[in-house]
Amino acid sequence: MSERARRSSARDDRNFYVFRSEWRIDAPPDDVYLALEELRRYPDWWREIRTVTQLDDQTAEVRCRATLPYDLVFTSSQAVRDRQGGILEANLSGDLDGFSRWTITAEGAGTLAIFDEEVVATKRLLQVLAPVARPVFRGNHELMMRHGQQGLRTYVSGITLGRSQAPTAE
Image (cartoon, rainbow, N blue to C red):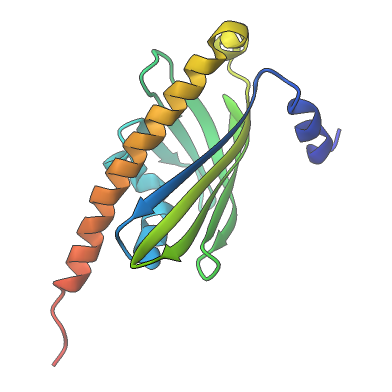
């Protein structure tokens, strides 16, 4: 079955999730892009991203845990890295199978970072509990995203501040 056909059939699956979050960050788009590009640094600012283990230049293993007492472990393989277009996209496999994408654009004096994710939860616990716990899983994800936005705001403000205080060549 092709990837497109598999995703289409997954849309009817109770284990298929579509998420979208919009983060407004008071920092230049380039600073936000640079922070989001460095997946290995996510644990520094996003408390639910517990570990990122780099497997090669394009691939990392990510371990997440939000409020609920289970970890999600998946491999993130870089599919698109377009700094000029403000796009970062990765294919995911493991406890989550699908993709995630950041779209980073200027908004006023700051940045709008949109996170889109389409995944099938393949972790057995999530599959078994999905019929009754799906709303709880979605709420868990929303909480994780709020914490990520707060962490990124703080992290990027340090990058922006550091750049503005950097010594200039005379």
